[in-house]
Figure 1: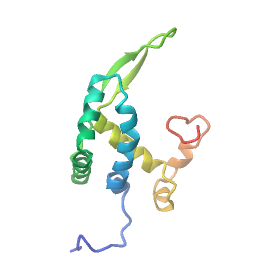
Figure 2: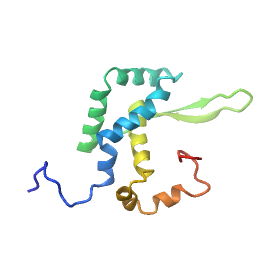
Figure 3: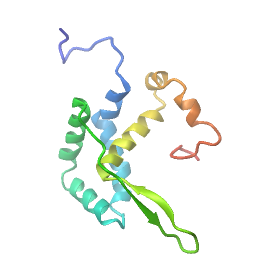
Figure 4: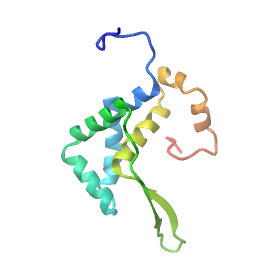
Length: 138
């Protein structure tokens, strides 16, 4: 039996990287800024709720991811109007979804060799000239 406090030689899986508390905190800080400026009432309410006690919410996300029972909440589609353009459909995700999605993205874009080695060809695919969504420097 493995002692939970004892290090092992087994490489950590990518899910472990996503649910690391420092990764979730970093994701919250990335999401927070825009969520608190949102014009969507649900997003603003979620962001303010989390901002009241972020430790509680980040810890709850961490535990749900650790137990394997985190489920993305339902998202909703809306038409975004832009002056002089035809409306385009967008998806509005609950803030908790956004935190986990950002944590996943941060792991996928990690430059840490131990993580990059486990990502296989994903970094190459993300670096293609036609891939621009969420890619730093593009």
